[in-house]
Image (cartoon, rainbow over all chains, first blue to last red; front, side, top):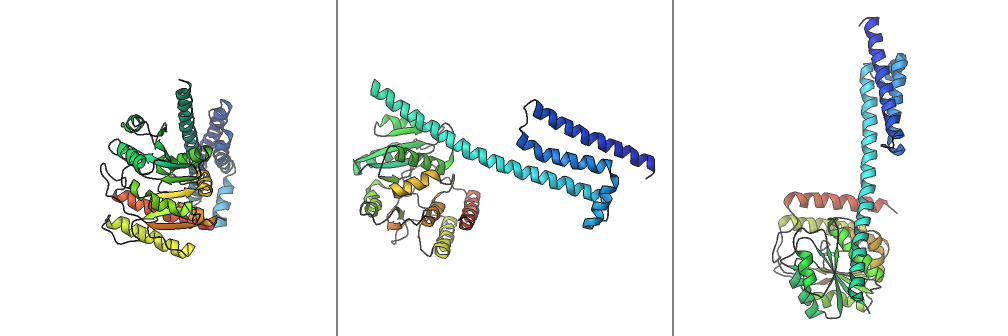
Length: 122
Length: 230
């Protein structure tokens, strides 16, 4: 690959990472994404931005952990990020299920209570 | 002493009336609460028509555990001293209730499990279920040093302390084996008594082959992890 190609992909990578960051921040701004869910996404995007700007970083990182082909390290970082986000989702869903169950139970109990009250008043 | 029968029911329109009426016949001093777990059939209407029970309609299905827990919450808030859980499908016989409440009445247990397997009986279930029960029984022996012959039985009696604990924490699905661990860890006394059960009268068991496998894995995981919790 010659220098021009590398610069082209670099610019594309920088734009892509920046785009992702802007997209996420915009979602938070419009209150369509809660901050707690955005942190992992932002972190992943910022790491990608850094790697795009400082190309050497990826080579150094790959060397450090013994990856021969630096782009493979890119996948590793991405998969790691996605895995963390997914686990975060599972935790969030579990919490939602628990609160949802409690709500359903309370609604059932309150309805029964009301019914009893109406019957007594009649 | 205020006593209540908790009947969890999901699509039991063909069985629920019989369960309520036979309960009334054998245990007239029990109040009855039916937890209709988001049934899509006439369970709620039919149960209401008997005029013998309080019906709690859950707006959506929360699973047998969540339904029974609603019963515990109700019992707690209405100050009941004793609660029994009896299935809405009619496999538990009201004539056997006296046996499972006796250890609570004499304060020898905090929870009583009605077991099908303490006495030789003609009760048969699938090999898979029997295998599951064997495995849970072994787990109980290993972790609790105590043997329970029928840890999946949903025919149970509870005193106030057990009701309090389980109203706070109770698994959504397949709760029975886990409940033994939850209560044992809090130092409560659990006793098994022999009862006879009927083969289900109508409708299908909720346990298919794959659900049974999932059941076992889920409960094994839950129990193992709960041993790590202090």
